[in-house]
Length: 361
Image (cartoon, rainbow, N blue to C red; front, side, top):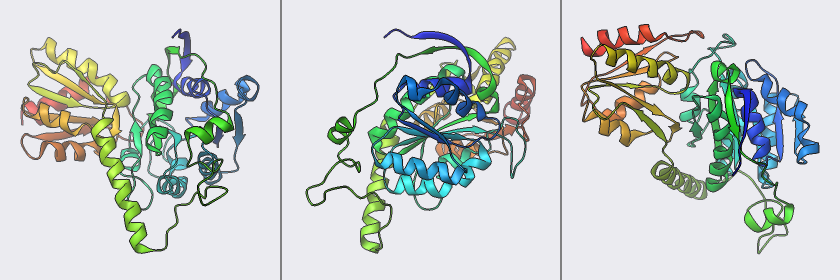
């Protein structure tokens, strides 16, 4: 497959990749630092390129419910926002998960809580990986660390969403969304016709069931016994996702005696830390979770049997560190280092924290 090389912002790359992945509809609302996603899609006029629908909704609540409708019809639909906007979407995301519908949600995270700052943060980890809204549901959560992965995860996100009939979230941040890097883009995929949707996705409202002229999409079930069965079905699906869809990257881990765990922008900083540490004779490795859910539990546990200690590096108050500690199960020390409010930790700060909290601890 021939790929086109461009220089793009992360927000632009995920938008262009979504168009090329055959997206049928984008419904969003502007908020910094993700507004370029909608601005780029609008400027590209995909309604002329592919027939894709683009609409600025009146609010984030409206946009997520537009996704609910589009996904129910078997269409490839997406939205994008940033932390406070994603908070407003939580009820709709829970409805979509409960109805087992596919969609793509891009969260370009900013610092909080509240309106916070427009600078990059990773403080939405819990919101993405623990569901965020009400009820027992999960989002497949991808954490890009480059502009290239912003594009790749758009394509992958749609594939996973339809494979499991589940919402997929790309959790980026203000740094990756705004930075410019070269990116290779896939060729244009054709959007499915309504007849193809009926054939491939018989659950969609465009199709029929043996006892109905049209399907009815809902997350409502008033019978407790039936609702329990729905939840059991969902939990079975999540176990399948955890078994088959874990993605992570290991850097200099073969002989590592100490380990950093970091995702997204933090992992970019930590790659430099690994080099700095090894220049000083410290055998340091890096595990980068690419899927935040499903979390690479087995990979962390395996490396915990090899190293003397783990430092979780995050741009928040320490959220992913809880999943690391669960995976390690007390076998070795696990500590956390991070910065708040949109401040990106420096490689020197991380190396010093490693020495103080892990090596010297």
